Length: 420
Ligand code: AMP
Image (cartoon, rainbow, N blue to C red; front, side, top):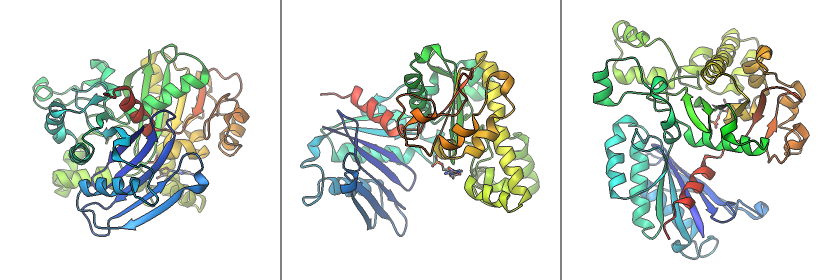
C-alpha cells in the first residue's frame, strides 16, 4: 500500500510516493511551468532502497492545468514497462499540502465536500498558493476516487499560538471582518524537526523549550513549549518576520504607504517589491541565494557583507524574543537550505550568545555535515544522514541541524487518517 504526497505551487506540482508501512520514498517528481510555455515533468522511479537502480526521466510535455500534471504522474507510476504500480488502487491515501487553513483547521483533515467549500472560502487569504492546492485536490479526488484524501496545512501547527501573540493591535472591527491575525507557516517543517529533535535527544518534547529555525529561500522561526507552537515569525502572510531570499520580512508598515505616496506604487507593485525584490537580493544587489552573497562578500563586495550581517542579525533577534517569550530555551534546531548547509550563517546567527548558554562548536559546525552522514561523529547518537549537533559537549543549550521532511509529516497524517 502506498501514499502519494502532493505539493502544489502556483505553476508547479511536487510529488512523492511512499510505502505506507516502511515510509520509504519509492518515487518522486516535479511538474514545472504548468499553464506556461515549456512545461515539463521530471521524476525518479525507485528512489528508495536500491537507489542505484533508480530510473530518472524528464519529459517535456504541455501541461495546461494541475489536473494534467496529476494524469502525467499517475501514468508514470503505472507505466506498463517501468512503472511501480500495477494499479492505481495501490494508492490508498493522498496527502495534500495546503498552505493556508485559516483558523478553521488546527490539524490535518480528511477532505470531503464541506472541507473543499471551506478551502474555497479561505482562498483570498493565500491567493498565490491555495487555489492551486484546491484544484489539485479536486483533480486527485477525480482520478483516485477510492483513496482517502487528506489536507495538511502549513498553518495548522500554529493554531495553538495564544491570542496575545497571534492578534495584531489593529481595530477590532478589521479583525472581525477579515480575520487579520498571525497565522504562521512552515508548520509541517517545524512540527517535523521539533519531534525529531526530541526523539534524538531522548527527552519528551513537552519537557523541552525549543526554537525551530526554518532557514530556506522562505524562512521562519517558531517557539515551541509544552509540545505546541507558542509563537512564530511569519504572520498574516509569509512576508512577515525574518529577512529572506527575496522577502523583506518585518519592516515598518509605514514604509508601504510612504512608497505608495512617493513612488506611486499600486498594491500589486508593493507586493512585488517586498516579496520578490527585497531580502538578501534587495539588500545585497547580488542574489537571493546566500551562496552567491557569500562569494560576493569574499570578493570584497561591501553590500554583500552588510546583507549577510543583516540576515544573521534578523535570526538572532528572534532567538532573543523567543527565549524571553518561553522563559529560556533548551534546544535550537536549524533546518532547510541555509540552516542545513551554511556553517558560516550558523556561526554568525548564534555567536555572542554564550552567556545565555548558547555556543557553537567550530569543529562540529563545519565537519558535522561532512562526516559519514551519521551524527555520532558530531555528538548525536542515532542520528540519520545530515543530522548533527553543533553545540560543544556539555553545552546548556543544544544546537542541532535536522534536515526537514515535510512530506513525511504529511504522509504520517494521511496514514493516521486513512479510512479503510
Ligand atoms: P530551500 O528553500 O530550503 O531549498 O533553501 C534554498 C536556499 O538555501 C538557497 O537559496 C540558498 O540561499 C541556501 N543554500 C543552499 N545551500 C547552501 C550552502 N551550501 N551555503 C549557503 N546557503 C545555501
